[in-house]
Image: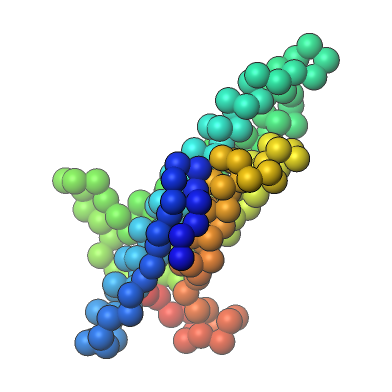
Length: 168
């Protein structure tokens, strides 16, 4: 279905392909999940930027809200989370001219990226206060980040009954 995001409708679907080769199917699945993780990373950064813009124009006791220590702490944590996600994902992708890691994508890597992005998007979303829960741009962006996280999921690990922490 169609979901309204902060910049327009979002249509995302994943078509099941014919089972050709289990190894090829797993590699395609992992590539799709890595692509979704990169998209979520960018959207989380956009949400943080919107929070900074919003809080820069608000003040408490004569100080810009964005400059308050608890707010700065949340924003610093978010920036570190974005860097962590990028570093974990850079292991499996590379810029033109660089060598990517040709090995399988560990299920634990994608699970960690998903957890990091979930945690940071929710923390930054809380900076919007009650206005973040109104059907506005921040709420739509946050919902898009969550929906993409649910759509990509995580790969099975031994703890979830999967194949002993299999890599993708």
